[in-house]
Length: 399
Image (cartoon, rainbow, N blue to C red; front, side, top):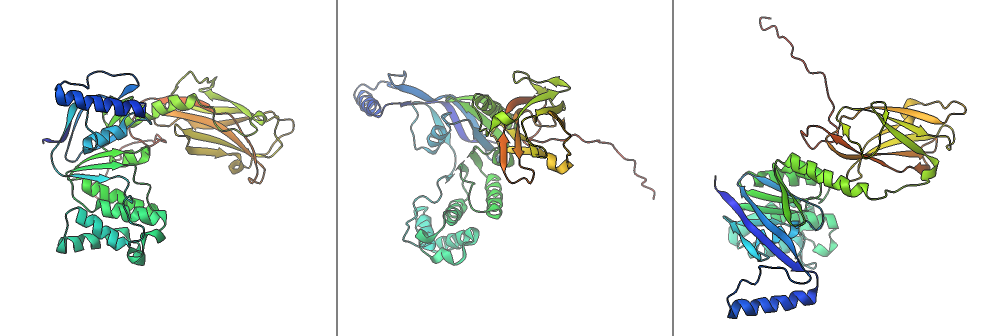
């Protein structure tokens, strides 16, 4: 199957200074017009490469996640692929119709109704007559905003604008589809419809998807590239791309001081397989984990929560002492917590301890975090991956 997108040796540079950027652009135009010289070969003062020698192709049915942290070159790459920027070196070859799911509610006239805005957008797409009427009805049905479809957009909530924008942008059948951070729209039910719609489009298109949401990437994509400082560091399976992204995110978070609250009231040690863990070590999948928490500065019978967070600082799991009806002995100082085994996807995580009042209402303390890495085989972007007892059963086929 031939490629719908071919990115060949793509380079793009910018200037950090607006004045220099304008001056360089004028000089380049003059030299190219009168001397016919290649003026894009080397960097000049204040310039930097936003893209560096990018090469990949994309075929119909492939959904490519473009991953990387801010400044990696994701937006510049999309603009070059869409033809909104001209590369300094290399080329982008597209075969087929190009579609976008970008800033979907942009361009809506606030005083016009949803129907009128959709009609204008349809005409700009070259639709007319029955084709335009069909497009308007499809958008109305998908957006599902009832009578507001015939009300001025200025009276819409932000969620309604996003719903209408997604519907107006997704009722199409492109060969190449670019999706950039657009799926935080509407309520959960509508987001599920968005996922279904993108899956339908992806069956017959080559899709490029940019998002910082690991869940969305894992759900929609079957291939991933990871960018860093304009270079492709990885191109392959989406699970491996996610693992690299999370690993890099862990590197960043370990250098940052997390949020704490009266951290002097509580501290703890992480024990792995019975031995004291230090952050420079790694932790293998399935290792036994436990905490020794110093509670000597706390009042009796407070609630202790152990929080497990991923590299994005989202809480994945917690263990709350209130569930165990813990009875505090007199003169206690160390609370031992057996957390079971580290049945986690390889990546960066952290533990912290939160202390609440006995009734769970008032916040007493939040400790410093202890970061750690889990190593092992990477199977899928689900953080908690429990082991189970697997066995085959004999079946009596005569009964």
